[in-house]
Amino acid sequence: MDSHTLGSFFAVTHSGICFQNVSVYYNRQRVIDDLSGIFKFGTMTAITGPNGAGKSTLIKTIMGELLPNTGKIDRGGISISALGYLPQSLTIDRSFPVSVIDTVILGAWQRIGPFGGVTSKMEYEAADALSAVGLNGFDRRSICTLSAGQFQRVLFARLLLQDPKVILLDEPFNLIDTRTTGDLLHIITRWRDERRTIIIILHNFEQIRAHFPNTLLLARKPIAWGPTDNTLSSANLLTAQSIADSWFKEPELY
Image 1 (cartoon, rainbow, N blue to C red):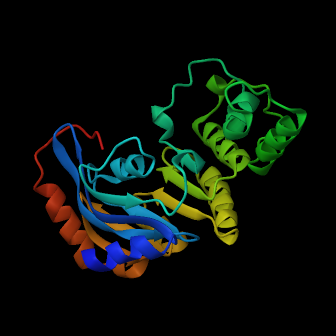
Image 2 (image 1 turned 90 degrees about the vertical axis):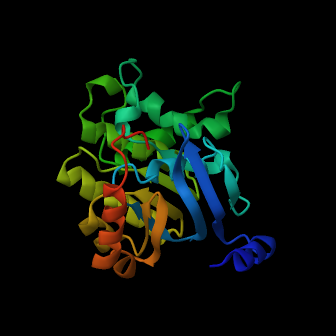
């Protein structure tokens, strides 16, 4: 999609999250380079690419945590506060002894507000969300006692309570067991059937090909964006890896 076409698109429709020639710098390094395209509402898209390719930076840019240095983003009328976001679990501090149920209820923050209280209806909905992710009876457990898979289920329950139309997932299956991965993929399939928009960072090409019809392949600049089978071609993957091999060695901050 060229600049003129995408510019016209911004003006006439709100059918997705649109990027027009977006570049983002992080620690003076250009991490996203001239990205143009659209995450259409109601679709599932995987973002993949080598380490340091800009995948998490892209999610943070959609969330408004980082701003484009050049280019333009249109979120299609969706406010940033209405986006559902699940960060990498390793970035979350679990040392504070908060309960499972209280963690899930944080998903209702937009409804509660800074001065509101938790209602019995919210507590019921939180318990229902825990049941949906297979954690009946875990309500009063501290999150610091949970396994990695159990904690990831809690984070999915929090998203269920939030009930967002656009869901951003940053490597949600990292370091969790096969059964938990299957159960969480079932929830993602449910969201797909409800026509929610799902944008997910994954490294596992088998999972991407099996479950996600659209893929963005990044190597700081977009290599391909479209149907998964086309995007994950051998030629495209070789191009992405060749670009990654040319980068200077640096910490994986992206």
